[in-house]
Length: 123
Image 1 (spheres, rainbow, N blue to C red):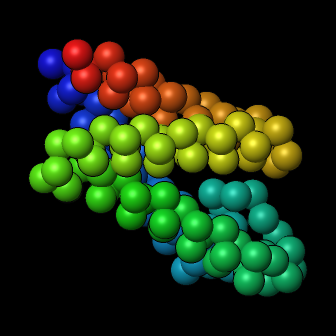
Image 2 (tube, rainbow, N blue to C red; image 1 turned 60 degrees about the horizontal axis):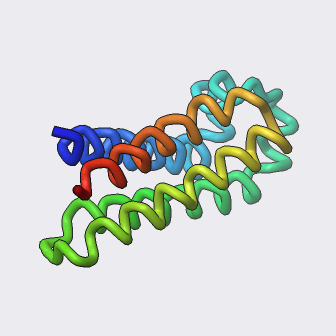
């Protein structure tokens, strides 16, 4: 039961990061992206390359989480899942401190819950 919950929550975190990739790489200067991030057009255009880079990193996090869920190697799955969830947690805390506090809630908290469930479900 705990392992299933960890799997589902990890999948949710991966989907979040795919959404972040899309928002940051492709929608940053579009009305939808500017609305989500509360950006003005000039600022969005000036920071588009930085946002795309950030989106790419979010894509790598999603890829790692998906890898951890898709691997058939049981000895590899948990360490991968826990490593990439840890990366998400650190990124979420850093973003919360340096950009906007709600990033902790949106990004770090779901990953932390998934990580706790991952460890709890191992037994």
